[in-house]
Length: 622
Ligand code: BES
Ligand code: ZN
Image (tube, rainbow, N blue to C red):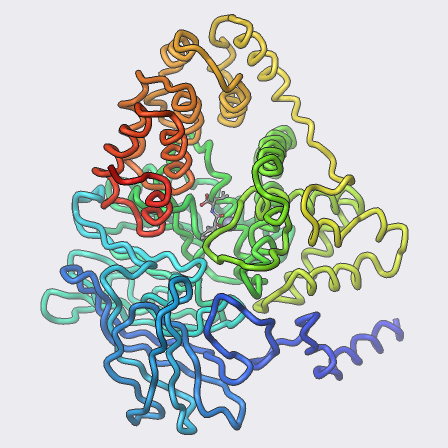
């Protein structure tokens, strides 16, 4: 007892020691940070700690204009602060209320421009600016692209896009609180990843309304997010609800009915939810991701609305980020697995608690297969959890970051036991709450609290091999999913010429996906036709299943599904679905290449800039 207290006291009494960069142990406004190659900021000299936005959304010109006022902490000798920006038109900069000198550096293709501002001793600066119409974080939708036939705007900050609409230090290690006043046309509502102070807005003149927000917890700047549209709210629990366009909100509320239970499961495992409310915003179909964990307000693709709650693991995933990612955050994107791998592991734990062990084993088996595919296709250098060398923050192989990351934690769980890992993770989130984390910091922390010098345990875990080496270490255990045994038999039977499996009707989404993903890749047209007509795959409502089917059909050059491919690629713009199908089409000779070009020529303008950039690299113009 005495001993423990002594340890505690000495830890408190030695802030300088615990501030050492390798453990990232110190909180505090100027705690040292590892170098972030994705940001121009020099946070060891001067750091943004609060962002105050006063912006108007101009839908005609597709720009935000107004001011960002930044509170700064700086070394006493700091003369300037360096911010990230991309495409911003700077009108004026004031430091401590007076006009000050600034310099907008040349634009780097990936990083944008450094905005260097003379502080003149001030610790608050105000930037008057306007974003560019093609800001990479923003998508301004025309009425035809929304369910309401009204205009819509949303932002997507991760990884390094927010600098295209907010001049701040856009590095995940630098935490900032924020508040905002946002002016929008008065037929629309604004929502943000923050506490909403004016749910109905306030009159702002000229047919406009203003909405105010406040995020009192310090967050990495990629989590600042906004949505503007014809939005309605439905509560689904005491602290959970759904924002969506009116014609979508009912279906959204149905699909999200389990959110409160998910929160309770996550809280029981990892400690209190620290963000107040947990709402979701269902976006129009051009939202480029499945989901984005913006604090207090997860952004979701409408393609997860399956009508039967079968794709809610997406919500479990984004909710899990409330601990892994939003509370303890990768300090640099090279350690993205600390966000996504941990989150995928927690997503699995939430799924297991809600839907049972068998459900969880099936998800793990699908994930295991994704890893195996990645090991065959991703070069060794791309198979490490901690990326080394040239790192592109917008580019990651999800099977490594997500699935290998989660498998690492499941392997640790298998070795140390579930209770011990749960207790450790809970304390990890508590001790590092609202702080950045590195791979090195996590391993040091885990060794300090769990391994504690046990050489046999250390050898059994292979921690460094998992974190720093390509491939999958030998202590990984392949999951066994009983529910997939009958799928395997069905694949064999169908592959041997039998009829489409009668069990299909009783299978869940993962079993159907497993079936479509493990069928022989080469199938004759008659066999594909038999499948399609048995299960109406060209138009099946579950978009994950439809995607797996269309990938199989395209891979076989199955022309009768061409119109279904066109519909799928025109109706939604989720990168995970869109990119692989265009890629598969372009690998199919003239039929596929022509189809890809025709579909893309019509659909491109409706895709998000992030997805456009990806597909531009796949589909060569005619
Ligand atoms: N944070 C990610 C989305 C993201 C990743 C945005 C990388 C920008 C760069 C989000 O939590 C996520 O992982 N979404 C997944 C869904 C999940 C269930 C795997 C997606 O969008 O598919
Ligand atoms: Zn995620």
